Length: 456
Image (tube, rainbow, N blue to C red; front, side, top):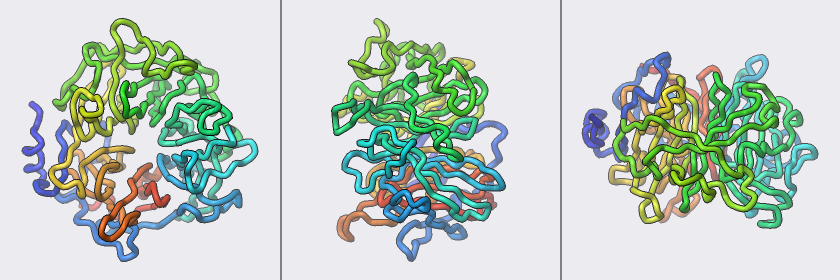
């Protein structure tokens, strides 16, 4: 039986804290994950930061690795605006490569600098930058990974230690000043970006991409589409011709398919956590390049296809892929309202399960609304970037069902009377699990957070 939100909050001691979710937490984490050692209040209350940047629990500290507008260490220009999705990939001799997206539109204050051999469309303002960190966490280098792309929102790492950056746009050549079509995925090699260049992976589809996750055994790539207007986005899988082939192998092409859940045209209609659907179908996309019609508008036959509003975070855990619907609003055309869902798809059983539903209690200043980027923590818990109203947090969900605030942004974009805070994005952990990296979207800031992660 599904636990009600109020029952769950009462058990976790979170009543009145404005944190709300329901679901079967054990489903989120592989059995081999480390157990939680957290108390009933997580790591404790957040301590106000005297520098006004980032509030953290006692015992934790942050380092600012990079800020929008500062010079890139490569000398290629300035650190671009709008820090978004990010991953941390292991390098040689204890180094870490942070690959960071910049969700820049034509009006972005600071575009990604164009670099010869790494620029797709000179009119594109987005792209990726790469920070190389030493074994002590110091910044050794910061340079352009790819430029000339547009609205690089999220993406995901590959098993061969590259980053797939996703364009969240469908602009075609001749619109918004573009000289080439956009809406693609690009591969970025953090060690040698020129090895991957600026080549669109066209077979993976042209649509409003958000994030990806790679099945490390089969090489199948799962993709989310962040479309918040009807018809809403789809959940895709890409079957590569050369699965797990390494750097550049995705250029060989493959087959793009969209998920159909029989009898469920809109995932928002499902409200009960634990609800599952067997016999999930995958339907070939008629025109992956969307030459005339956006994919979500295309004809998938008399049975139709399954849509969902605001499909965002996507990651692989255990033997399943998980993906996030950030919110659904009936007033905007969804079948029902919710404040965030996490879905789990098991490829072997062809089963889709609604694992968690998020929602605010009473106060939008507090965590619990509109989950966005998401990752598994080394302790076995979940870290979620909030992208909602009011104060913005990184918050955690433990394996035992506790929700707690881990960080709160303090950079006020508004006024003292009418404050406004930039969302968090790109939460990820170092390969050794000792450091959490996270971005503040605006003003673009990349933080490294260390502390007693395994504190009893």
